[in-house]
Image (cartoon, rainbow, N blue to C red; front, top):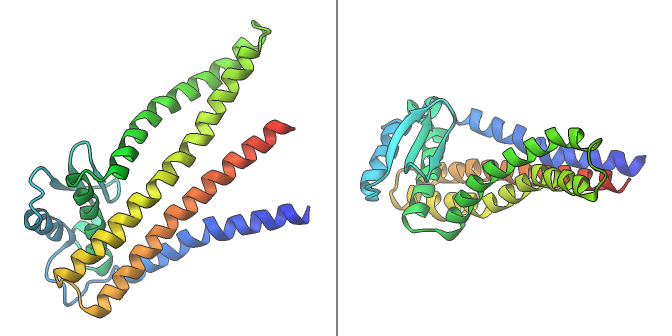
Length: 228
């Protein structure tokens, strides 16, 4: 029992604490910054023009900050769109980093985009298979039913693991190889604020790491349950 409790304690530390820490960091730096002249939305539009991201559009959203490589759209949350905080500016630089990846045909971004599109179809299949499996058991005394159930469960539990792991290099590249150099070379932030921006990006990156570990743990629990 003690090792199991230790596992759950460690899981809490590596999955929950990073999210709480990230939230605290982002909240701390959401206050208006006296040395930043424009809002997040204005900064995004400025970078799109400066970097000649001709096919990219910028829009405000209620769904959270992200870049959509299918529609070539940088979407900025309302909280960051109308703010000139360090959190807003750093977040925008990160999303523009994804747009740069797309422009340069960054392989990992293309692979993740294709994977996410396929995953949606696979998850639908898994959901349908798991729903109809109980109906098939009384009708068919065959290993095929067990195989269908295993495949559906593996897709439901395994696909998130693959997506989270494929997300890590894409997010780290957008943050540390693109967003930070943009902020530094464009002299948009002072050296002190650049250090804060790096801390913000690192905190956000840890949430992706935590999500990956959490999905791996869920897959491990499912596989362990199958052995019983």
